[in-house]
Image (cartoon, rainbow, N blue to C red; front, side):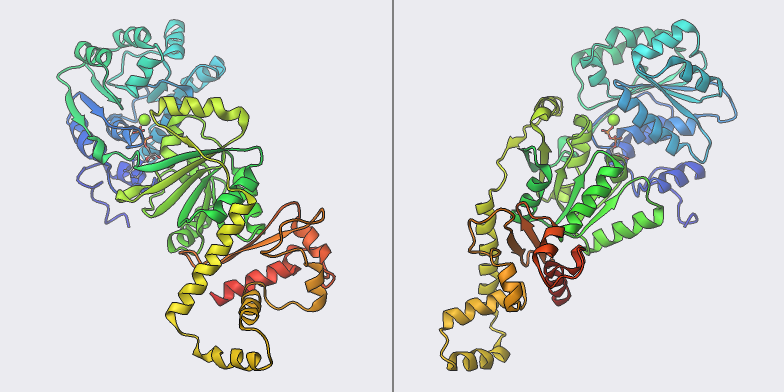
Length: 507
Ligand code: ADP
Ligand code: MG
């Protein structure tokens, strides 16, 4: 494996850095990386402009790490970052790039106890990723010295400008030796950034990645506002035509919980997060790639670097922390010129956060109402109808003709026979007792007693997975209770479960 690794695409790198990039799951450089890394490795100052989510971190991270002399225990590179979250993420990525070379990167940001940072600094650090305010604090205290800095990076320069850091940045720039390499990365290049670059950069080489190459995809962006996100999600999953989809949750625990809740409802989902072993992750990813599961539930971190082209939907089950994360997440769909849909679920109180995301990501997210129960019913009916029509068109049911003919000969009406056959194929056979216990289930049912349940069968769909789900207040446990023949209270013994199994094995 290592033998094959001669270069990262067209870029020549040291063995250890290549190994790290490989371990990070990067198969080839993104366009901004392919064009800026060689220039930076040659020692040029570089201005790299490309949209969010295009891999700018590694574009400066790889050459910066390559340049560090790991035996020299000084701060050799400084990355300025607009926010604490970004500083943390960027430091993480740099630590990964430098993992085999043993290049240490420390994030330094406001909000964390400064003593802790000072202790970490004393242990020896090669690269600092800092927010301007906290960095100045350290400079004033003398706890960070920048005399040995050879590489300076201004990351997300436009955002730093937006946040009013320009004076702080200039102050920091003046403390760094002029004999340095400066790399500036930004999604946009407003005039003050141009001015900054003219003043503080040395014949910068400019790389601009045109919009066509951007990962911010050509997709529908919508949001649903609801207090009942799980119910809402299930409805959407039932009505929406989906292929492979990724659902994002904020925490590892939320991922696990959603996997099991969806599983209990008969959806096939797999979870991906940092607590899983590499083997477990690979297994989930393989299933997802091969279409054996069609829902992947992941945390932001776990989803990083996932490279699957045919994702039709990205669902933000938890609203992303910030617009960067939003753009990263939705960038998982609509790849390779395909269309995609991004859906975001919010609680009413999260609306402001959503507005902020729209503003900072320069995007419009349309509000949509959740499908109602009757939309769902209609949809299920039309799916069954559609499948039935297709079966008729395909005309491969000769073997069953005699069965129907025999039943008709008993004097039953043909429409009745067809309806009964449909019921049998969807719900399986029920004896009279079961039939009574579940009398309120089924398509035609619209009202009923408390605890009543409606059953919906979701047949077909592109991925040939059949799901059975129920709606309303009934929980799996209650289903078992409502069924006299069920001997235990576990979901697996409920008729629903059996029914689902039957369908799955038949598909
Ligand atoms: P930007 O700074 O341009 O917004 P990031 O550097 O945050 O973008 O990268 C976006 C995502 O793409 C990250 O999850 C990163 O790990 C991933 N990524 C970066 N470069 C590559 C690559 N060459 N191959 C695969 N994934 C990559
Ligand atoms: Mg970035």
